[in-house]
Length: 299
Image 1: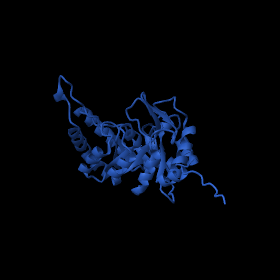
Image 2: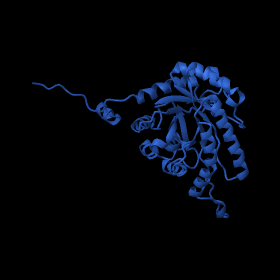
Image 3: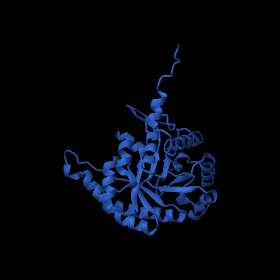
Image 4: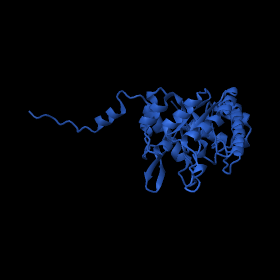
């Protein structure tokens, strides 16, 4: 398994700083979050930089660009979807230029009908079919550029079974799953369900930890929250997963979060420790640790 962090964790760092810190902390790669035509810009925006220069910076330090991430999500607006398709082609072109094999998009938002106009809504099945039909020609374009489009379970398709159905229907070599563990946890789905269900369709993964409460989620350091990251790593080991597990610390949107210098070194240390193959399974090790200490036998 390989480990990366997203550039949303460090919005004030330029690419030189990102690569230097990735190397220093022990990461294999970095997810570059692209912000084409978006209001949130970071110091490391690949669309404001020469892509060939970005590629040289990463290759010179032997750090991979794990994924070029977008927030593109197909809508019900036909004209908007034409624009989004063109944006996705730009991401694919840029990924090829910076030497990145993956471009990430979101799934889609299912629009429910109202009480007054129920016919304005759509079913989850029809939304999934529309998303697939929109993606298929873009997948062909990605294949021509040696790039794979990975779909994140970000909006209405957060469960593994529905996302599996969507990707399996397309059956395209340049379409795969980017599984976000936190988004699945938000709907109560555990790694014990997600990972075996999706299995080889998973080409990329994202993690972050948080405490869940009645008012929502409060982000924490890896291993200090309620998200089952350790179990996720173990399940990924079980299917022979060797691609990236990427930490998404959303400081670009939430500036009050802890600084990347605090979060990133701690996270990769824990992730690598959990990836080590144990002589016994995780649950056996935990059970052993809870056994009462043996007492000496008196004669």
